[in-house]
View 1 (cartoon, rainbow, N blue to C red):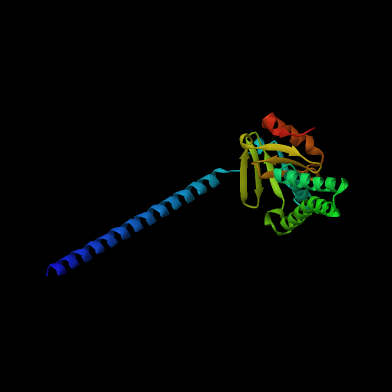
View 2 (cartoon, rainbow, N blue to C red):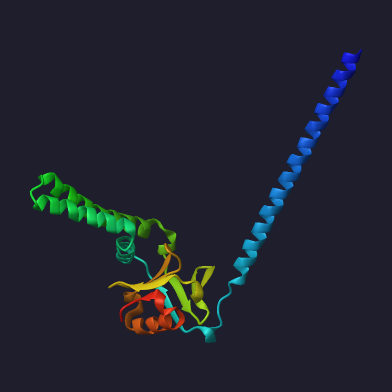
Length: 216
């Protein structure tokens, strides 16, 4: 008899524990859903905050047309000023120097392959992005104001403040403004035409001089 009572009590306790666990699970699910809803609301609110600038506030406007050549130029500059590019170049040069000092021909072959592989791979990557990335199929419209840089394409509009810009550099083909260590706005000189000095003046006026690495 006592065993039956104990068994019933144990069963009831187990049932109560399952109920409590289910309640906790449901509470956690509700909390997670609430957090996701809150995040979505914040993201939506932030997206709504980006409005086109007043026409009177626009200092300069530009339509950018990205192509394989411009992308390749940007990738070369970005890669060969990074640690990866420097290491690959030094390693390739060292192999060739070893060959010049009497090492086997294998060092010459290895040096040529190492030095040639990176730019060739970057070219293939630039070509693939230019052909497959929908963002590069249509012009990107840039608007420069005292507040920052606006970029639009279709119905999408984004803005980056001058204070958060990482660095401004230049190549023979483009003016490049980095918005972070890995992201950048690229302004081809072909699109700028005779307005290169106008853009440089805006950049120099609104960015910290230490961040502007452009030789005029």
